Image 1 (cartoon, helix red, strand yellow):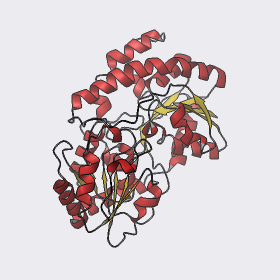
Image 2 (cartoon, rainbow, N blue to C red; image 1 turned 60 degrees about the vertical axis):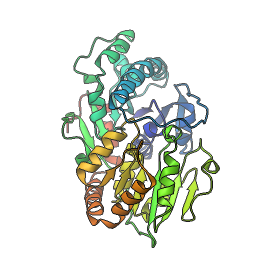
Image 3 (cartoon, rainbow, N blue to C red; image 1 turned 180 degrees about the vertical axis):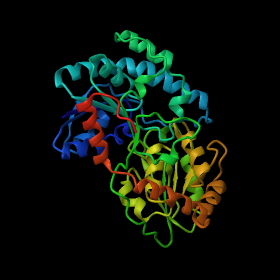
Image 4 (cartoon, helix red, strand yellow; image 1 turned 135 degrees about the vertical axis):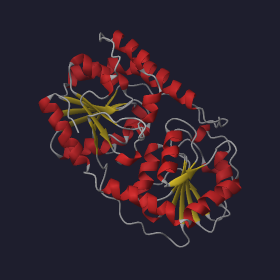
Length: 380
């Protein structure tokens, strides 16, 4: 089997694809990954074949003001950004790559709409991988008109039922309980565990708090980092905070004595010894914490973060704060509650156990193999 994996976005759009790509290569299949050059370095580091099919969007590493959460703005950005402009940009180069590399199947992140359109135009069976864990943001964004515009430009008819999003196979690395029950899952959705079951957490004494605002929003967070770090500095805990490659930790001044600020620390290093995760609510960060049974305190700013924060609150695995008005005292109080109230940890451990019981990435590969061979929907 020749499997082409594509994405259109930042690291959070590539990372969910990599466990499947690695498992497919381990099973003896030919694998390639295509997307933005600056993000492809993660696939290059794993010795996967890569192709640059999208332009990097360079932005100066300048911190900007924090905007209030606006769900309509986020839905509009998904529709006009990913479903229109980025889909229009990505469909032609992916189509050209498919014509030369000749994949038997295409696997893309769920908002790489251009790749879905290219694959459909060429008659290549295609699977999508969930990157927006609750499933609600895609449903709320009214994508039809934008997608039909790009479909028409690529010689495809309108798709009023948005069948292109779920036609053959949808792979979800999220536990089923995390999906928003207000929206029915597609019949082709299959849940899997992205990696090995997480090791038992060995909490430190004093407890360790892991704090991150992810890779995409840290420069758009205003003074949220400083407010959060001031609150964490008053806790009887050791804090590991990461700020990403675009922000110099020195720009934050001298951290409190109990706080260590780094550009990057692998989650695999910090989560097995953490007690609480304070984060922005991105799907990768949330699922990483829950895979270890860790309660969360969430500072949602945009994208899928508000929906993830709401679902975490509904499941009882954590609590969310208003990023515009939150004070250092609010952060300290919320993290203290997450550390001291056993109900948060108990709820997070229930989700951890649910995730651990799912089949691993080899199961996702077996489904992709079926799709390549049978070329028909793989129903749950």
